[in-house]
Amino acid sequence: MSKVVVIGAGASGIIASLKASQKNEVLLIDGNSQCGKKLLVTGNGKCNYWNEDISLKNYFTSDTDVLNKILEHKNEVLDYLYSLGIYPKVKNGYYYPASGLAASIREIFERELDRCNVKTLYNTKVLNIEKNTDKFIITTEYEKIEADKVIIATGSKAAVKTGSDGSCYEIIKNFGHKVNEVLPALVGLKTNDKSIKEWVGVRCDAKISLFIDNKNVIEESGEIQLTEDGISGICTFNISGVVSKAIYENKNVLVKINFVPSIENFYDFFEERNEKLNNRTIEELLESILNYKLTSVILKKSRIKKDSYWDNLTDNEKLILIKNITDFDLEINNTNSYDKAQVCTGGIPLNEINNNMESIYQNGLYLIGEILDVDGKCGGFNLAFAFITGYLAGKSI
Image (cartoon, rainbow, N blue to C red; front, side):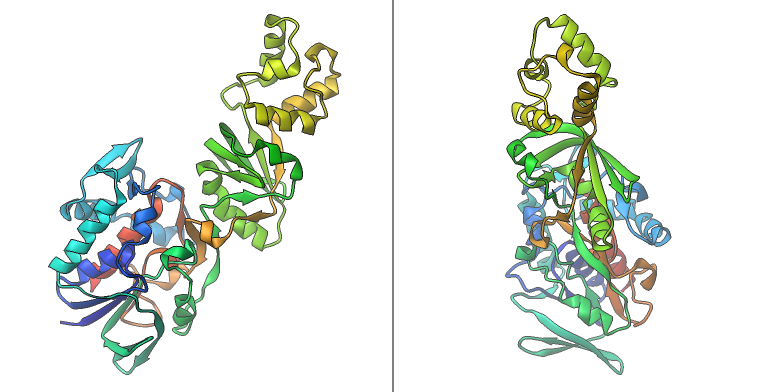
């Protein structure tokens, strides 16, 4: 029997502890006062912990081959979660606990840790990890702890309030690992364009297209939220990691927004609407199509007065108006900060671990969860990755 120390009591660390405890003595260390703190705020407190479509297309990483091998274990891990007592409610492919409460999952995990005799050490920060001959020496604020194997599951820099501060990246570097730049992901995007302030608070269905250095790299459709200094919402979150990297590399980032994606040819539609609704102003023609705040921003950007009539506009004015409704340009210069990000992009490259999540540079050192350079879209993909990697490390040990 080996002594295993798991650092980080989030989703991946908990699962790793439970699996490793089947044949080993396990100590779980975390800086918070209890396990699963980040789980409690996931999915607005409902905990979207899985998705029916766990596949490569929903993740971003530079090592797709390694990730694909990891994801091959998805069914085994989902069955394991069920065996712990997590009963799902599936809505549009999204898995939630049927209770609708993230706390349900955390309570199950806490009881299982106790049942499996996993020792816990909370309110404790790990300062350093070294390898001394055949033992790891973990230095905390209060003591030094010996271990045969160490699993690092400390998360990234996202959601700092839950305890993720990125401090373990430097420790991992000491074992020879590279850390790809860690940047906010699943986060809102910001612009310097002051003309959009009036649209704050508007939610609408849209299609957004991301252009980096004039190249269209990704598109997303669904609800977006318009903010005082940019855009937010699930669609925005899903492209934000790519945006973070592009901004870090000083590339030009432009988002194009189609505010009427359900109408195929909006120009023809608008001409026909103008004919049917006789003697209506532009503002009146847009009534019930766009939120009035959004209409105001678009008309000002198009330099068209709200009491203008479609028939009185020049051809060029008509084209400008339609473009700003169906192809609104928003130059992005930043993202929101780490504390508002749900996850991060960047971290330890997947090609620096083996199929059991063990470091290729240091035997007995395992790296799991969000510290790895993998970030998923919204929809339970990041938690699923955390559960799978934790399961593989714990099972291997």
